Image 1 (cartoon, rainbow, N blue to C red):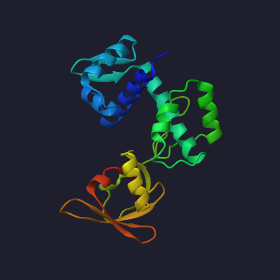
Image 2 (cartoon, rainbow, N blue to C red):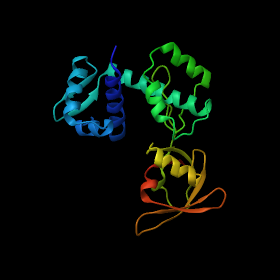
Image 3 (cartoon, helix red, strand yellow):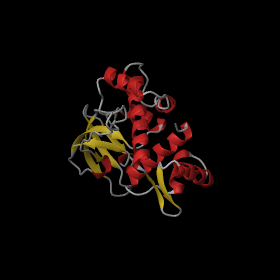
Image 4 (cartoon, rainbow, N blue to C red):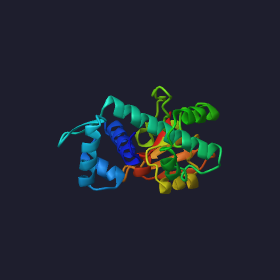
Length: 218
């Protein structure tokens, strides 16, 4: 049995390594968990003693096979709970992260399997993130950041890279939630902002930052 804090570290290491495609640095883990580098170092030593990570000072951190299994299971629970909260309890997509952070630590494989069955085995959560199945297999779909599209490209919003409530609420205001259809009209050279047209004919100018945080399937 590992503690909730240890589970959070494993999940953070997994996410950082996946996003950056390399071993997670101490500073990156500290930033992800909003703690100090010294606290991270202490925790990494504990996780290494339990053979959940491979940790070498100044070289970064990688999950062991067991560490990866535990992190994947934790992410699976988190994202299934998010689906449940949105689809069954009517929460908005910007309200569920903190609740799911608490629910993901509830133990019991049978509970998770029943939740998955009840929800119809969803492949993606309300933010468009893939949900691993009981065997740790991940769903995949081709998608691109809006910022990488060319003028004239059309697509459907499939996910976000920024999960903050402020960003999700901003997308709600613009009507750019999952499933929204859009067309890139113009990339403005001055600041790389993006002018798009929505399915209902509205034209919206988005910042470059938004373009790098919104996934679209062409």
